[in-house]
Image (cartoon, rainbow, N blue to C red; front, side, top):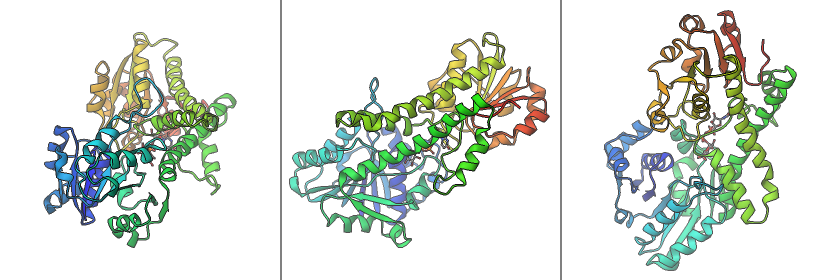
Length: 438
Ligand code: UGA
């Protein structure tokens, strides 16, 4: 089939390359000329394991290309909307500027009956408004139809999540559109990926409520971490025991510095804002608590570091491992790690950060922090080390080697990723979030 993908960020670039790998002819369109040039030369503008290989292979096959000109989408049978929906600058709601710009630019090209498929994470009701706007503005008018097919991919696992998703959810307005989408995803359906059809509003809600649930699960265990800190209990053991109950499950139950990134934080806020508009704000008041628990973990990490250095950061050297919002990513949007590093810097410390992939993005957002080219270089002369993003390579650092370089042997493991025993054996004062002192 001929497909167009509007927006080539994490979602769109991955979707375009993966759809080409299923045998479709795909054009990806983005207003960012630099991004388009990079993608056309086989370079993924962000760190995503496995994606460069798929991109290069599909460009070589001739089935995939990228353009800044919307005219190129006119021949496509199905158009996927994959643009970003960030948080508004000074409000909780989602900023839909890119959604409406893409809708209008696409509409201008639609002169024959065609199917538009929304994949962006949007406030419930957006799909319905989009359908009306498309029909109003497209030359093909009522011949335009819309389906909603939310994306559940995780950064760091984007290719796998696109080609082997847990489920495909499709919100429809016309039953005949199901056959079109089944053709798009035929290969996945042959591999028994569960397929669920519903209406537009339910499809939009599946995505935002999934992210709200995941955020709630993380904040639940982080709330338990607060209780553990007050009682001397150990949240890591607590989490393991809870996770053994299959009704609870152990995923997204890791206590630590909490969630960040370009999705979970802004999605729960946009969901609360939308609930307010719909007059059901009370239904989601708990998400405000989820957000606050999450942000309190960042303050707690700063408090533990300050306490470790004797009550003031002035003239103290602080080493930070991790800048990305999670391992296997170079994304620093709403990164808990950088939030903590910046707060410590603001209180007067000299902060040296290391991250295996996110240094470039971190430097752009926080140029005043120091950056080290290795984990070991970062700890040189430090009074305290904070592990803020749990890249596996940090677990391989020998605490004796780190200890020989540091001014004081103190480590705060804000992701509960290090082995407390080996760090304590090497002479460190080890603190984990939600874990007993010794
Ligand atoms: C999230 C969802 O997991 C995806 O299903 C969804 O498609 C995506 O948002 C989206 O809306 O586009 P992502 O933002 O890539 O994916 O990151 P996650 O893997 O969900 O991690 C989010 C944050 O939670 C990270 O900061 C991570 O460190 C933190 N986390 C995760 C914890 O603190 N504890 C856990 O147990 C798990």
